[in-house]
Image 1 (cartoon, helix red, strand yellow):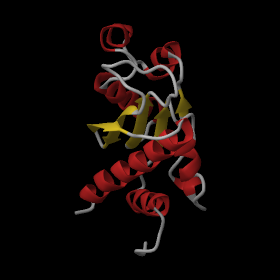
Image 2 (cartoon, helix red, strand yellow):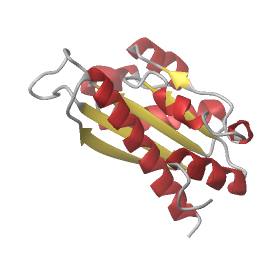
Image 3 (cartoon, rainbow, N blue to C red):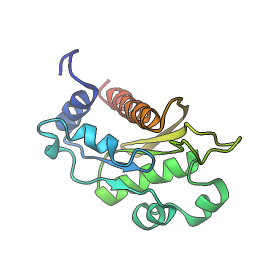
Image 4 (cartoon, rainbow, N blue to C red):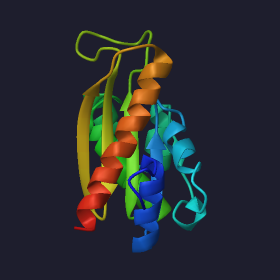
Length: 163
């Protein structure tokens, strides 16, 4: 891994060295995070499956997100991001997972949850970290910024595991 490597190349390199698996659980990004990871040659060593769970029913059925959590907090919440990350890791048997849930727009926002609000959950070896983000731009720009932030968070948390 050199300093000119892309974020996803660095992630894959760390995971290969640790013999860990990674998975994704995506809502508003619709598979963009997984797509970035699979750009890397050799990713099949560390990446076996991913989940696009746009509907709440899919979050519940595929990832085990609690229906009560979805009703009480809504799909765009830190609680759901955490449960998505944990559920994806559990389902895939992975030591690392990244989960994203947010409002990419242009509609769907409210004063409490505006367009561009995104929660990213990052699961690494049993711990989950959730960040709250508010991105600006078009639907595609918000999705792209979310993908970049998700990969950066995952890389940062993985780097902590190697000292």
